[in-house]
Length: 628
Image (cartoon, rainbow, N blue to C red):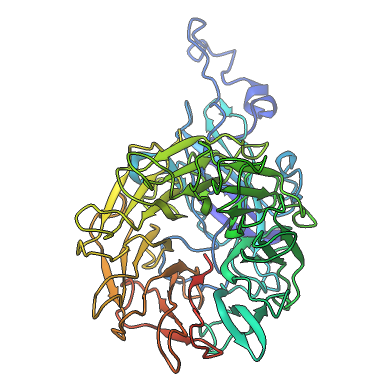
């Protein structure tokens, strides 16, 4: 394959075979054989070769972000952000493939784009790990904007070819090349939001602090501190913070902050605040306030917030919000079953009213459905993001066994009925934490990690986590990998927090992280964090790296929250953030956040940066939640 860039950023390709549409093929018009040659006459009994079928794409899913455009072209990482990996299923009758990228397609109705200025390449396809299909990485960087918002949105498609010509194009997908899902100011670096729902500046409560990334990492002090718009009330503002992705597709990531104890129309009905990103970063004034849709007292709307990905494939990221103690829609028994709400993005962002309301599937009191929720990635490879909702107090084999429910995305979004019921594997509080962790085994499908912090597999409350690999038919409840607490320690709460680590060592596989804030690594409840590096065979069942609290401080709860923030410093390796909400610095339990920069050798033994509570408030809980 001979590929080169020519002026106008069109990728000129010398094909090994003809790969044009059968209806316009010059070879088809002239005929494959010379009618005057008897030896070349066709066998009239032979079945004519047909063009390949339409390919089925696997990844990346719609709206995926590839990482920092600022990474040097020579960086020694397997998946360069400007040369992303594309995967698809092997296509019948195809001997090669043609793939096109176009940055001129519209945001809405991108599915009907005619590709007026495509970048075109041809490939035989490389075998993907785990035998799931084929993959391709461009040999040249895809051109992107280097001004705010850094990066470029591309629409892409693929078709199979053989000697008869090329078959139909696949369905179109889009991705954000050279962008982070947490780049709030569009400068090309990942940013960080930290929840600290018990801090205050003067008499004004502060609940969330933002740090903008740069080539040197994060600053020691926050660039922006967000106070509860209903000050002087605190209302647990900042108990949950999340990057929502790009809800209005303007190229900037958006931020959501939960205030689950907000009193609007009833006591503790809860609220969520949306802040749209822009070149100047996040404003201290919210762009939109979401109130409890049912105005229900003690519903705790905002007890979970998460960017949901593009669930309906319309070109905009979506938002999910949990209300863990919401009663059913009729406000009758069962009480505190919980609910979740989905808001679809658009050119003007999200509406103040939810597009989809999800109730606990089994109408059980105190199930706390919606206590945790997350984008599940694309578990079945159909291009649409999927949603997972935890119900960690749902009864199963015994009280508080827990459940998690997967809702698969589609052109019409998600259904109010779950697609897969992940039953508790005989543990307690299954679903207390959950997260899409990227592609751990490299097969192109998204994978899902679920924690059960109260699991008693060996000792009381030692904890467990379970990894589910995606596949073309979605995930299967009984097909999971059990990650048990390596020390089997009483009260360790292994699985209290889980996260995808991104690609911490740059080997092309996503890594996973599990926190155990109750681990007695250097003293009672000092805490530990465990890393598992991805590989072609999947993640190992024993940790690749264990990080204990470097201060060995009793009761610090190191690992209460963990998150990958993408590539904070633009070196090509994912970086990790660990929350330590009860760390004592100048004051008791003020909290800290610890940063580890990834490297080719993996996670370093010593932290790269320690962020202390900027207000130094006692019991400030800084780091109680860090945005995934």
